[in-house]
Amino acid sequence: MPRAARTVPRRKPRQKRAEDTVVVLLDATERVVSKRGFHAATTNHIARAAGVSIGTLYHYFPTKEALVAAVVQRMWQSELMAVMQHASAFQDAPLGDAIRLAVRALVDEVGRKIALYRSWYTEASHLGDLATGLAMTGQATLFIQSVLEAKRSEVRPRDLAFAADLVVKTALAMARTGARDYEAQIKSGELAEELGDMLTRYLVLEASPARQ
Image 1 (cartoon, helix red, strand yellow):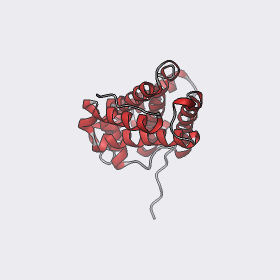
Image 2: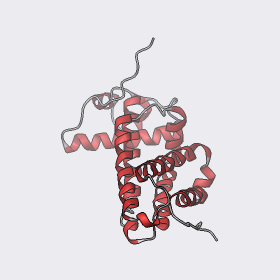
Image 3: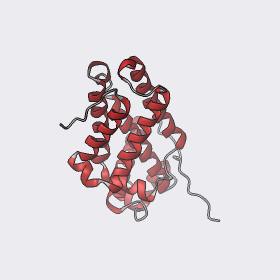
C-alpha cells in the first residue's frame, strides 16, 4: 500500500519574511488549483506561480497535499470571518434579516473562489484538518446558539443547541456543495436567497420569505 502523502507543513514560519513566503505559496496554490484542478496541479506549477524555487516550496511544505490542506484551512477561516463580520446584525436587526445577511455573506465568500471550492470539494475533500474544521464550526454554532437564546421569544425550535448546530452545518454544506452543483445560482444570488429563506422558516416563528 502506498504511503499517504504528508498533509501538514514541514515547519511553521517564525519570521515576517518566512510568513510572507508562506502566504505567497498559498496564494499561488489557490491560483493553480483553481485553474488546473487538484489532480493536475503539481508543486512545480505552484513554485513557478509563486516565483520561488522548488527547494523553497519544500522548505515549508513537504507535499502538494500539505499546501492544499493549508489553503483549505484558510478557506474555512474566511467563511467564519464572512459570517462573523455581521455579528452586530443579530443584535440590531430582526432575526430573519440577520440570518439572510449571514447566509448571503457565506455564499458570496464561496462564490468569490468558486473554482477553488469546486476543485477541493470534488477532488480533494479529504484534505483539511478535521479537528480544526470542527473547532471553527463550533465557534459559529456557539455564536448562533447565543443569538437564539437572546431572542428566544422569536425562535420556533425548542432545542436551541441542536437548532444552532443544524443551521450552521446546513449552511456550510449547501454553500460548499453549491460550488459543484449550483454555480449559476450562486452567481445569480438565488442560492443565498433560497437558503436564507429556508433557514429563516425553520428558526423564526411566523417567518415570511424575503420575496413577496
